[in-house]
Image 1 (cartoon, rainbow, N blue to C red):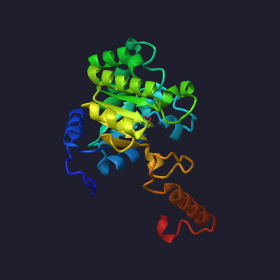
Image 2: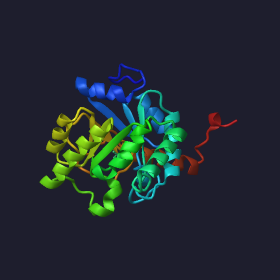
Image 3: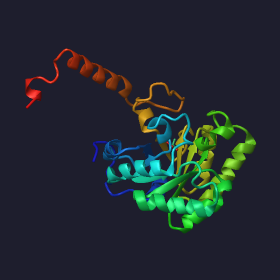
Image 4: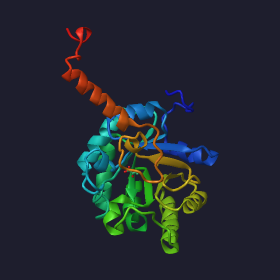
Length: 273
Ligand code: KIV
C-alpha cells in the first residue's frame, strides 16, 4: 500500500463509499484501462477505478466514446480487475448497450459482471434510462449514474461545453439525480457543470457525488489517468490538473533510447549474455 494517506486497506465497497460521504471523507477516483496502470493506481491507494469508455479516446484514438464495443470494454475491464486489490472497480456500459430496452440492458450488464468480475457498472443519463436502471438494479448489479456532460450524447449536444447553465437544464439534472438515487444507484458522476449546481446536488443527495469539472463542493473527484499524468499534452480543459508530465518524460526516454541504439551504446557489455 502507498505512502499516502490511505490507512484502511480493506477492499472498497459501495457501502463504504456511502459511509465516506456521511463522514465527510472525500472520495478519489481515476480511470484505468489496463493491468499495469490499474496495479499502479490501486497500489497508490485510489478508492475507485473507473474502466471508462474514454478508453475509446485515449486507448483506441477515436474522436468520441461512441465506437467502443461491449467486447472491447470487457477486455479492458478484465485486464484492470486482474491488477486491483483494494479499489472498487466500475465499468462503463458503452453506447448502445443499455438504451434500446431494459431487457437488452440487463443482459449486457450481466455479461460485464460475469466476464470481468468488476464490482459495478456506470451508465449515462437520467429519466430516459430509468427502466434499464431499475432492471439492472433488480438483477443485483450496483450502478453508478452519470449526468451533466454525458459524452455518449455528444452528437445531440454538439459541443463539449459546460452543461446545465440554464435553469431548465439545471432543474432537470436535479430531478434526474433524485430519481436515480431513489431507484437505488449507489453513486453519481457529475461532469462539467457549474460548481454551485454540483454543490447543490451533493448536498441534496445521500449517495456520493463524484465530480469531473463540477467544482469542489461534491463528495469526490474523478480524472482520466492519462490526462492527470500529463500523457495527453493537447487536452487542456480548465478542470484538469496535471500531476506529472509523462509526455515529456516518455519523449525524453524514447529519444535517449534511440540515440543509444544508433550510437551502438545499447546494449553494453553488462546488458548482454
Ligand atoms: O469514460 C470516462 O472516463 C468517464 C469519466 C470522465 C467520468 O466517464
